[in-house]
Image: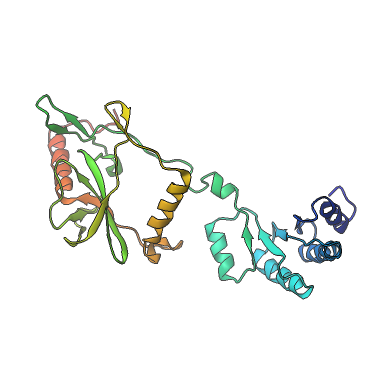
Length: 279
């Protein structure tokens, strides 16, 4: 904006970055900006360089990208990329793709790096079991007026079940109580809903020790390994779980014996008039 003319600004930028220029074309009028970018791209080509791309950062990105693609292709620049930004998230990107937007690169910032839609994880540690003097485990449960805050007792493990078709459910069970055969999972908020996994269903236990007797016993994977593991696991989810609008809810719950143990402890403590406060 320090230049009197938009095309003059593009030309000055291209002089500095002849092989890496991407022009933001929406400062004044987007499609007119595209035409000016094309004029500078023609000058660049005459000098032996090529324009890398243009960027759209406002307005109707679907319409503008389609019209910009037409202008670029007609002028002989089919390889000039169209970049888009402007507070993009997965919902906007999906919508733009459904509208046939001609966008090659997505610039995602604020709503990715700031955990925009889930700014905090409400995770709290609660005592789940104590080892007695004779070596047995005494299960503990924390009561609350809110069902979501009633803790699950025991030495807990998470078992992920899958078939050749992909993942079918994650079940929390007690390592000391074991898992009955066939495994039966109870909905965490509605004990009338259960799911029975086939006895021959494949599974993987997810939790591994990180510290033992005060010593670290776990080697942290690299970021690349974490990324690969995440992609592999997500790929095993049926597409109905992965869609953005009205996705199916992936099945997660408590192993039947663990659920019965938890309910028995809750009833016992309620009967004793145990406090359900946060203390």
